[in-house]
Length: 158
Image (cartoon, rainbow, N blue to C red; front, top):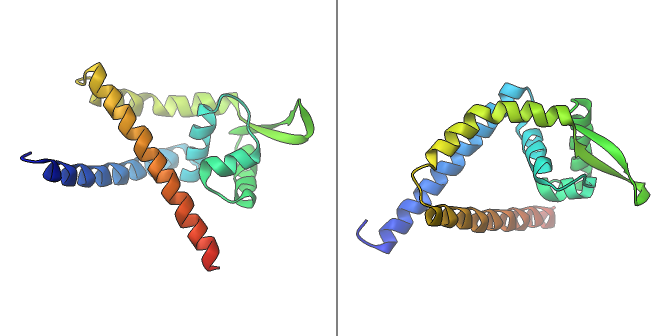
């Protein structure tokens, strides 16, 4: 690349291709598991949480309304992917946790893709991987903020 502006343009284009490819991959993986892509993303996000969460937290993680998050949890529970449990600190609240069988099922489905994604990163140095992690964190936060902004605008129009 001859200059920063050209490199930035290529980066933007490649990022858009990356996002599109990941959406297609997410859909294909969800299809192979017989679940909806939103359900798959919820299961993945629950797996990243340190413990059981409220349905409100599911709404925050997924960008859904509380009512939609409740229906999502109902669907995941019916599919055996999550379990509901009483909050030991507040018996009025119910928490949602990933079912152990779901962790195994999703983990098994991720074996080949995970290996493939890992191989794509093998040529990078530790400092380059740190830059990639930083990029993913920063752009992930931008994506979350923009999703919230767009959702708020949609609610304001109604």
